[in-house]
Image (cartoon, rainbow, N blue to C red; front, side, top):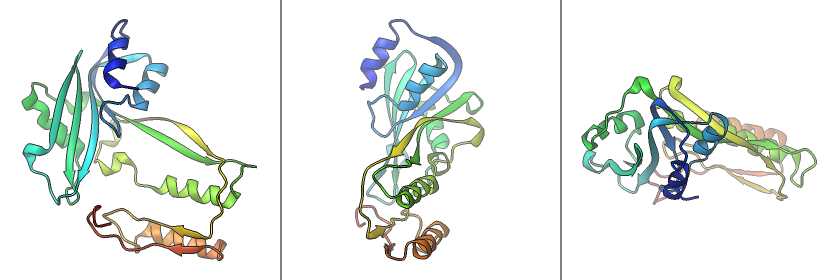
Length: 219
């Protein structure tokens, strides 16, 4: 669903506007974030200012400050924002968005809420995949680093909206490949815990957790 078309339709008969700024994270710029759809469905309001933010990681160690932000006005006090980071940068979304002041807009941290789309993976009893595999996959998904923590978002300003996804596909597993984050390693607590669980409960499965290089392109 294209964001421009969606906003055009919404503002034909706009919902109630409330004070403050809403920051909606989306993987692809120009697409409607799921969190926005859930917010309109359940809360039936739209903030006075709305930022639709996509975070991109590039194949360079660090990005210059001048290249950090790409801001596109969408009208009706809405902006599309792309935030660029190198693979050695420490992402800090609130600090990056604070620099939008130079674009004719000022971010007030006390009046800003961050809306994240989050899917919860749950095992399905009686599905095609073995129950232990479903539970293992659900646990790995649960252990994945949260976007709020990775982007250094203030914990008291984050709203997560999403849905539950049931696992029902069949998969014959003989090997399990675990890819750690680019800032992590096979010696991390999560990787070690998962490896011990697999070896203890499913010794027939070959566990593989290779060391990844720091650069995503090299990986």
